[in-house]
Length: 302
Image 1 (cartoon, rainbow, N blue to C red):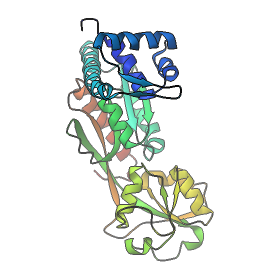
Image 2 (image 1 turned 180 degrees about the horizontal axis):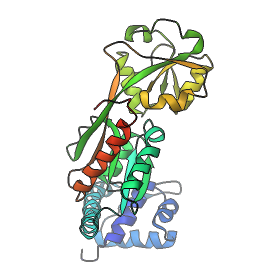
Image 3 (image 1 turned 180 degrees about the vertical axis):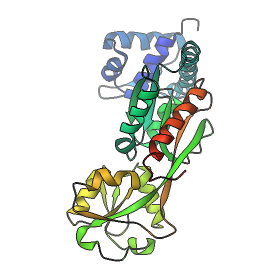
Image 4 (image 1 turned 90 degrees about the vertical axis):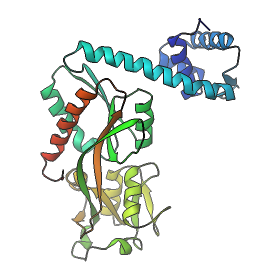
């Protein structure tokens, strides 16, 4: 077993994720034959096959599945050693890999990046925008340093720092502007437009309407808040959006905004990172900059 290398583990990890030698080779920036040779040498060293190979797909064997869990832990530890060295050498971080969910990214990122750049001009900020589940996975695997999303996450390995709260608002066609604001029970009977499966904001909207699963009556789905608002402007239905999205999404649509009576629907926004991260002090400082970037708009609460 003395022939096992970190490089082989990274190649194995790429192939396990991609399920395709060509795509995995591109990810690792090597040729496909070179990747195949490294995987074959790894299997020979282990004395067991890691992958089932076919003309269309590459998938992990049962042994490969178990091996993958251990490899991810090893690679995460190696990445944390690199982060530890980086944190020890620099007065502040040189690179920040930050993940953000799609219902936050377009509205707060410009100000966050501006304030981070002003505070730390040499900081290389790398952004990853995707849904919550993927951000948690990438954070756990060491592919990002931190993430901004809706809390709670309740993952034992991750630290959560609440930053601010924001309300949801009702978006409806301009023709309905003078109508009473519906309550949660009334919303369940209306044509409610929601984000597609996988977005946490969808689940939060359904929770407010007391809908445990599925779509409300005659519900429709969209891939972005922008799509939902434009559909409302076309008279297709109504939707809910977070307060931070109002100025951006409603300026080009024929819609009206209404705010709910108490209890008002809202969400808690925060940052998360690995509890084992060696950059905790720096990430706490960054969280303060992120919080101030949002609170400067005077539309959120602490």
